[in-house]
Image 1: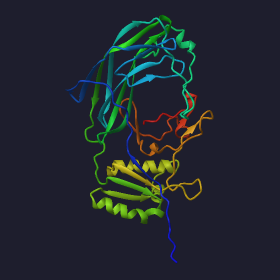
Image 2: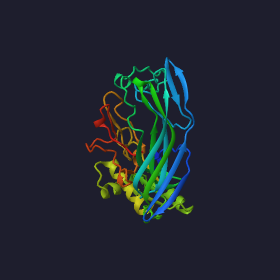
Image 3: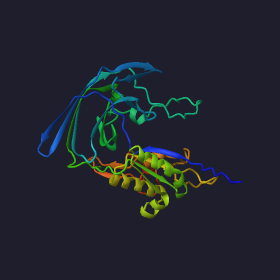
Image 4: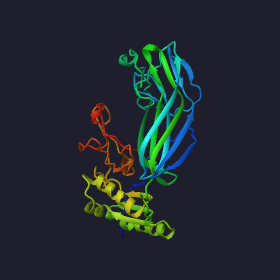
Length: 343
């Protein structure tokens, strides 16, 4: 009797992207300035909404997308503006001016709670005031705004994101609150001379173990027949052609090369665990957390987060080892033991 062979396969489809949430209203203008361009954005904010909870003042802004939420420190709204430019753009200068309105408070701003586990039972614990912050006349936070760049997708196009976070500021010992009333952003930049990614040889890349090639070939044929240009490569080929520090990094480097040389839009990683072992046909990238948290978890986003960039927009391969200690996707209560990822 002929035996039937069942192959267990894990299929993970990844879009090559990392994103920021876009918020805020703006009017933008662009003016040619020799070999550079200037974009100007203006945001007019609504009046803040004040409340009272547990003997503290709470403050909210309609335009705020998030809050400062460091346990024990004042919980303050943050207004974020995200700007998108073609990938390969050089950011020459970012100028942000913020008109603040002062409010005199009769109670302290509520401190942010401690983080709570999402187990359905733990509730947000009250945090005692951070005495260093609440006993000071200094403004918290000290900066009116911060900027951050990142690479990602917008409407299917690879872009450089410029994220501008504008803060409400609070002087606890003086009971003074400064809330953004108007934000003006000027960005001087140089667009790329040609598209950073201009190839269109393939649309879909499939990476799998050689064991699964016969089972996936019909999928490759089907995709090609309907106009989705598809390329399949084995992990054995990848490991012999990409010199990563480990197998996951070799696969990620291969995806980067395929993106830049072939212009791929999608990646399919095919292959799960090898039987009942802890080995994988497609290796996982696990985070590395300190002993006070779970030791780590699978991070499929690793394979999608190809680039990181500096404040000027220069692109680099994002290896998820920003501190260079050979430990990937690291998080610790000690800031020196953390990796900063672009996603």
